[in-house]
Length: 168
Image (cartoon, rainbow, N blue to C red; front, side, top):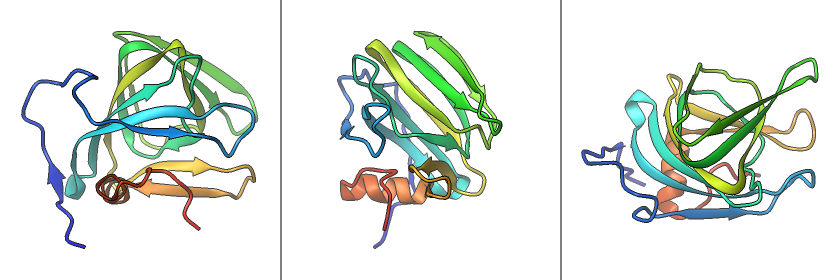
């Protein structure tokens, strides 16, 4: 398959009503409800860059349990974003962000659960993955992990497949 290696936006940030959203619902985990949408804004595979929007469903919709391997800039555009970071010693730290809050996380972040607030939330994510890997996902078992690269994310978007789904 001949895949385009970049999609660059040279325009204003579109409103959340102007982008194509892909909905992911369901969960491999009974402890939280996976319910979110995402939209691919732009990417450059050769530099490891990917920009996307993430929209959490109302009533604390989660995305899948993961960690960011890529350096990630987050800007909350609407609603709220909550992260529950999980340290290696089993302790947890909760981070809450509201509309207008900005964060820059270094590469190789801690595993976390992530969700919106009561009315959901929309977050702009801009990631740079020097080795091409954006995320590492976690299943139920400690050794049940898988990754998603920039090129896999783009391939899945172009194929209509949900990114981050576990491949067997």
